[in-house]
Image 1 (cartoon, one colour):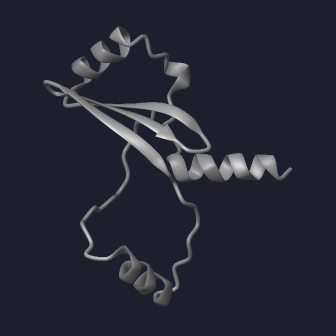
Image 2 (cartoon, rainbow, N blue to C red):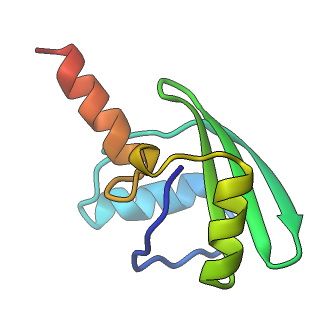
Amino acid sequence: MCIGSSAEWKTGVASTTITQEILEKLGFKVDVIVTKKREKHENGNVEILVDEVDGLGNFVEVEAKNKESFSRIISQLNLKEENIISSAGYPDLLKRKDAAATK
């Protein structure tokens, strides 16, 4: 389960190839590639994302409009606080895993 917040902006692009070329010209390099399958489930003000991430495994992300709804669904799903991953996203987790494998 991943929770937390960060500054993020999403938009569509006409061509991923052209976008990649622009990013390269601006000095950006591919750091990590995340491949995942995602299912989105909604019920009222609660959204649950079930992700299958290549190289990492399966994850659940819970988003709710208020703390009461969040706490209720966490309890209903029997999710444990010690399993919360709030300090890293999939790219960071993949890099950590790769670093540990090369030691």
